[in-house]
Amino acid sequence: MNLIAEDKQWIQNVWRDAKRWRKIPLGPIQLTLKLSKRDAAQKRGSLGFTARQERSPRIPDADTTNRGPAVVVGVGPGLGEHAARLFAFKGLPVVLVSRSADALHTYADSLSSIGRRVRAIPCDVTDERAVMKLMQMVESEFGAPEVIVYAVQTSNPGSLVSTEAAAFEECWRRNCLGAFIVAREAAKRMIVARRGTILFAGATSGTVGRKGYVNLAIGKFGLRALAQVMARELGPDGVHVTHIIIDGNIAGSGHDDNGPQINPEELAELLWSVHQQPRSCWTSELDVRPAEEEFWEHC
Image 1 (spheres, rainbow, N blue to C red):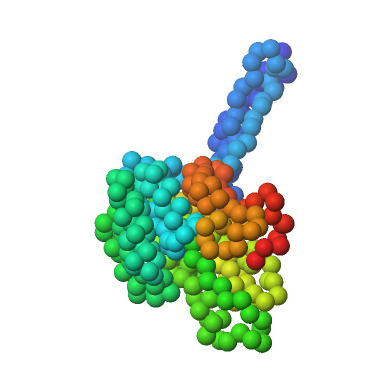
Image 2 (cartoon, helix red, strand yellow; image 1 turned 30 degrees about the vertical axis):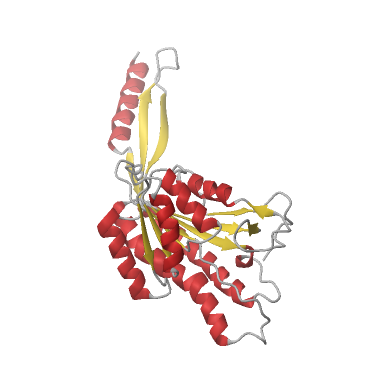
């Protein structure tokens, strides 16, 4: 009997000490031992426990009652036009951005005629001051952007020895520098709002440097690197960054219509689905192509 009493007292002491020391700091995380007694049917005097890690609280889901605008940069035939139309139909205010004021107003009038809230703002996105002014206008009228679609692409095919520095720089500025400036200014506002999606329209040349496309490849490689850095930096602040590799021609965008074509309406739907992804399952990069397209053979 004395032995049983001593065992019981020893178990009680272990239980008390375990509860006292159940929280163990391990740098940025804390290990907590959750202790519980087993029922009477289990072996007398035994203890069971489970361990779990306590991390920083999960960022709450974004409030969709007061949504900001979708800013579509590079509005024109193809992806830009259809992305703007779809995001407008989904209920977001839409800001259309392009260098061509005449084309912008045509698209804006089309969306406004069906009752959508839209704003057309001509802007050279390689001009830092112009982009800063653009984002200030967007924020003052609509609030922090909810979505940025960067659908700008400039390509001047040419070999290394035939390419002039001015042409090289122009492609890099449009394909990469403009994306950096727009994304930086948008991210400043999205971080404060703790929400937002930045979608970059990339190309096969962002993964494969093809002969005769030095201008396009350099800018698109840079765009892809920018997206990867941003995804790592901004994710913890609730900002989703995705790079979409478009491995094919988009119908209606002025390219050769003889080969396989990507439907721009369906591509816009893909962008919307990425924007809607839950925070536990974010995509940072994906590639798309028509079913008949040869993989990674497009520029």
